[in-house]
Image (cartoon, rainbow, N blue to C red; front, side):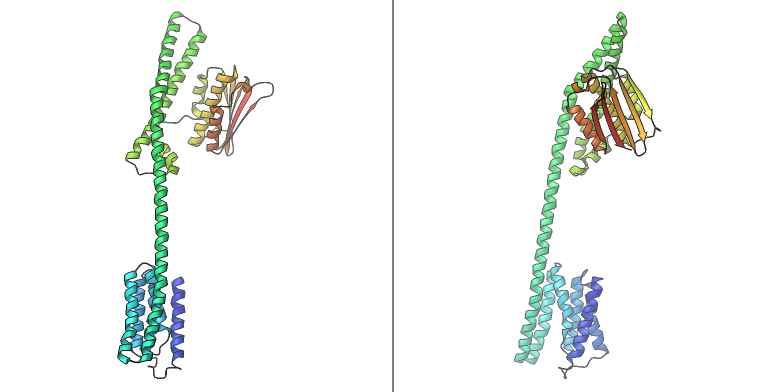
Length: 385
């Protein structure tokens, strides 16, 4: 649309100025069919001024030179050539642009040599200054564009370098955490699982109390589950670090997607809650309200982790003897509530509750915790689903 406006505007200017110029130049060649065709060509050449400005300059300057050589009235038919000249130099076609400028001045210089008159040479000098006045601002525009492009390129390189450095540090930290988990925590949990199994067999052979056997069974099952989950976490941590050597470098904003894509172990969800409650270490009931339906993987995992952490806090700090888990399916949401009969004021506001709140907030949910009137503690998480 912009090109059409420029071509039409220049065409109107060229034709109007040439027709009016005959009143002051009676000796000029009258406009004929060839003259009209050449004037049209000087304007139509601007059809390429944005995509191929050097082509537009060649067409406009060439037709303007023919109009001048055939002796038509002097007017603004050279204006399209000046527009194309500016566009060519500003777009970075400097060689073609300055060659066009030299051609425009050279055509007028030939006329000065042929006529050898003072006023003609004055006109040639003025024309050369006009061409220079168009070409020089075009150079300024080109330099400004080049400078802006270079600044943007350097800014993009700096941002990319910062992202790569952040990714490198994240990968190093991921490997460090993986080593710590494997060398310390994993070993400790393995020892617990082994000795729990040995103790359970010893109690069974000795005919010990069933409470001790049940407790050892819970310890053995929980430690094995912890080992399995820790193995999955180690796989994610190490695969994320190893993939850095072969995969394209992602931005820091892509790290969660990278980890998600590489996590192959199935994540626990609401379907695994009965097994979790069996190994909770205290009597826990599960009540499901509403029509049960599959949730998004993130919501399923969050439901499981909230129940897991809430029951862990109940056993560690609240001194509870029983707990109840209620899972409520609503339209567009799911609510999980964990109630116990312990003393919630004894539970410290540490990493457990903070981690639960952060996990729930990460999926767009809300976590609330409060003491229950009459005794007990309640953890409630409402998640969009």
